[in-house]
Amino acid sequence: MFVFCHSGLGCGFFEVCWLRLRGPGRSWGVVVVSAAVLLLLVALGVALALILTRVMTDSEGSFTSPNHPGSYPPNSMCVWMIQVPPPHLVQIHVTSMAMEGQSLCLFDWLEVLFQPRSFSCRFCGNVAPPTVNTNSSTVWVTFRSDNSIAGNGFAAQYRAVLPGHQSCTREEFTCDDGRCLLPASVCDGHPNCDDRKDEANCTHIHNECGGQKFGPYGSMESPNHPRPYLHQQMCIWHISVDEGHVITLSFKNFSLETQDVCEYDYVEVHDSSSTGAGRVLGRFCGTTVPPDLTSSGPHMTVVFVSDDGVADSGFNATYQAISVLNRTCAPNQFTCRTGECIQQQWLCDGWNDCPDGADEQASSCEIIEVEMCQGLSYNLTSFPNIWLFIADQREAATLLRQYRVLMELACFGPLQRLVCGMFLPQCSPQGGVLQPCRSVCSSAEQQCSQALDLFSFSWPFNCHLLPDSQDPLECSQP
Image 1: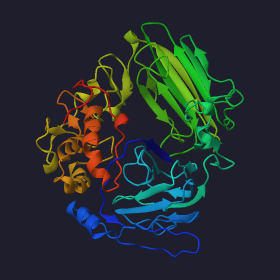
Image 2 (image 1 turned 120 degrees about the vertical axis):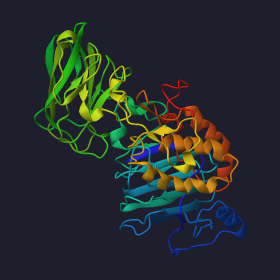
Image 3 (image 1 turned 135 degrees about the horizontal axis):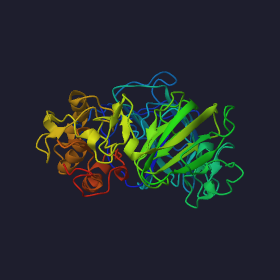
Image 4 (image 1 turned 180 degrees about the horizontal axis):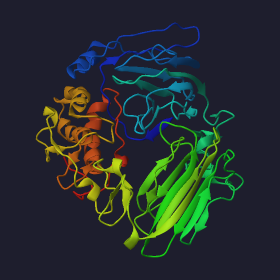
């Protein structure tokens, strides 16, 4: 399950829109919006079929994605408006979820918007999110699917609760502000409650593991290996060797919970003396043994995390210090100018894996052919798009068609630069692919949010995930 919660909302554009809501003793209902609103939507080119505007005042009810528990259709957008009489607040509990889910929730998602328009949560993936205790008597819930991968969707229930009576399920953790957390989010090393309560009193959960590793060689393993590792572990090993040496880490056995994205049980390796500095050499889960990893200097940090769910046999690994002068790379590896060894599949992937970027200097750039994105400050891009999982320019052009309907808006210029910068990122002949700078996203959101709020569309980009820099070597200004 992926979730993004953010304040400040904006836009989303789709081909089909239909809405249904059901409460106790009430059949499915569909109401057409007023002619004025419909004309505005048609003017934007959004082919919306049916819009529900009737306020639902039942104290509890349920709603699901189209065809649930069957697969939901492509290119759909469903909106439910839930309103309970003040001072009651809306509480939503998603009982099941199976939706296409990448880490940004850009393709299929379920979004809960609190009123007044100040906060929203977006969910996707295959794990039902925790209970949502809103601070409002009016809530908008939006389901969106794109034109590709589909799942079984979701089923959800809502009910009216009085302020101060918000609750979480027995399995969930309750923050002081009423926010509910899944067990996997408790004592995971990342504070989720504003008061950090979820990371307090974790000594009984995090058994002694990890520690400092010195000397020219050594080993480490998950707790209890080769038997199943313990639940809710966070082990950190700090490896240090003599100056003039680098560290090669080799995994001998590896079997962790299999996931589409490694977020529950995983091993993460950092090219630094701590987790807060340097680049991440990789995050691994499942049963595939990770490749040998080599640091760029005399320090490396290895992190092992497990949740309270599935446990496997874990891993063991060894490390060895290698003199920079004597280091050689394996035949299936690429040698950086610094002597560091990296995997061949990391070449020309848009990321500078060598400290000097040598692995990207053979990057293949191509002229931008998508008409909507011609005339930017750059004319070279590179595929595949590793951030949005887009194979080539043809696929990017297909996805970008949904944004052409906004060309008549005054804010289309900044929005176009952001969208093109993400879908067709800048490629430099010197090597590397650049995301748009955070300021490009913030400017587009600021200029477009007021116009797009008129249509109750939510902003699909999280600007804080983009580089906060003006350095043309770190990000682009399309």
